[in-house]
Image (cartoon, rainbow, N blue to C red; front, side, top):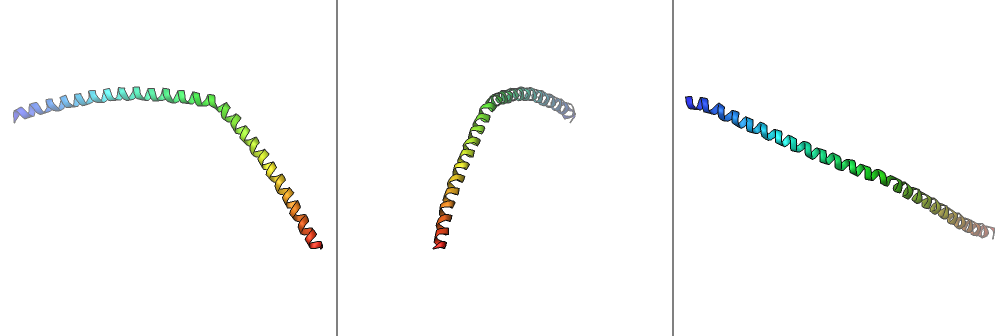
Length: 94
């Protein structure tokens, strides 16, 4: 019994120190990985900022195309409504 009371604390202290060392190593590796991820996100952010001007140009271009398309559709619609309204007026007059 005396052997266990002296041996068991030594084993527990040894296992606790091994666990502490492993946690320190894992935390250092985690810090390294987090730094790499931060560098990667910074690089991606820089690249996206450089593409913002291209996206603005594309956005302006599509807005202008949509405006032209809307005007064409409105013109065609108004012409068709005039034609059909004239036919209705002519039919009502006869």
